[in-house]
Image (cartoon, rainbow, N blue to C red; front, side, top):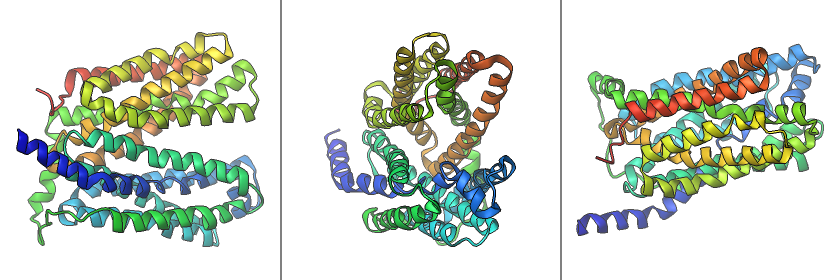
Length: 406
């Protein structure tokens, strides 16, 4: 026991800069995504000469195509990880971010923009998955949740910083190109350098040649284990249930006549609150357990969300929204670490499919949320998101196991 404790302490000591490096490397992952969000109107004008809704709708497919391509790569990543060194995959994924930023900046037409935006999306999913996999391989069991909590803060803080930078410096004509050149590109190059020099090489060597059965085995191990499959489905549904937040500002503007500028501040506030709760959630995992924390936070958040539709006071509603996102944020490291430990010998495959299905969950959220809003107004919509959360909690409770607890 003493020897194991000393080993864990040495592993953690060697991993302090490692966790910081992964956090900084992941900082760049979603910055270029601002093109399909904040700059949607400007891109329609730049490439189609009009901000007509039809052209904005076409431009919005940047994100759709990128998601489809990223999902395809995510499905292949499990097989690629059997053959290739995991740090090299991490660096390769991170290198796609600056290449995508430069390509989008130089894009002469919408087709080129779509190609390089999708390339950046590939880099995001590869680097994001490999960062968590490397945590599982290079840190002790007790330190993985804390590391995951910090790593999740990187992209979230970057998103907040990107929006602030855009509003302060790059909101003018052709601002999206300047944003890519003077913010996205430098940040992504720093992230690439940190990933290359800051992430230590693995002591475990990859085999030079791999039999076909080895590729298939990694997939079988994930899908033939009931707990692992349930964890993947649960995380997909949980993601869908957690995205009620995308309708929050529209609800506040409709129900309370909140101005858009103030609504944007509320949205930024809840995003900051959720981000700040991720590291705290990482520390709670070791105290409460992965499954216990995930089930508890999912149930509490799902019970809290419907209150938003029934409380008549604006400030109380905002307070409830903050409480809900903080509770959900506390459960994020538990969600990732429960998946990470399901199939230790096939972590990359497990986490690749986890990322893919959470992406599907995001699409499910907009589809189900939109239908519920159309048929049942905001009250029915928030109740629908709560039902998705309760369904996810039931899956975690009854069909998943925490391999780290007996």
